[in-house]
Image (cartoon, rainbow, N blue to C red; front, side, top):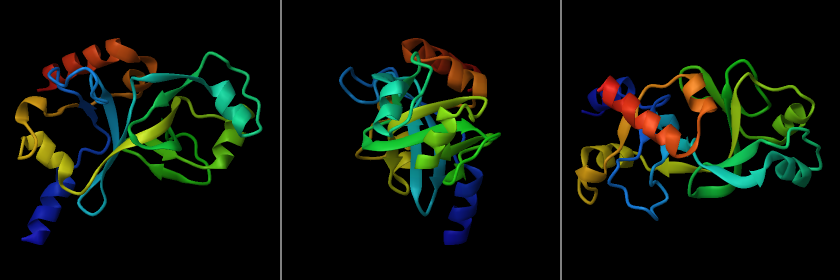
Length: 190
């Protein structure tokens, strides 16, 4: 029944895990070689995450300038979080810090999305680890589980791989190298 399914689902929640794109996902697909940190996964609202390994060409200096603020570290970039609500800015960060709109995002991470976070970051008040994302990835309730099972209309050979990861892995790597490392991590944890 509903309660049994709901209890099973809460025990099997993927919140706080990595989703790693299968090697068969073709070039041109927005999830090709993507590593996604899933910060929400439940039966009522579905699943939400951000692609953690795809930096954009936009520096944080530009993003802060658009907000009327100065950000002194020009070598940091915003990341492509995913194809959903690409104008939304989401900060994935360690749980040692918070802003006015901060929510738990897995085991030791949080997600913030408000204007005060920019003011705090510009003043040097920042979490130990963090990345700013434009956009996110989203799945309707049950959709991600159907994709992972390969249920029609999804195909098992394009299913997601999963892995546990720590802050260092999430925040210290990027690009193709991070996907390769996540793929290896998934194989080891399997």
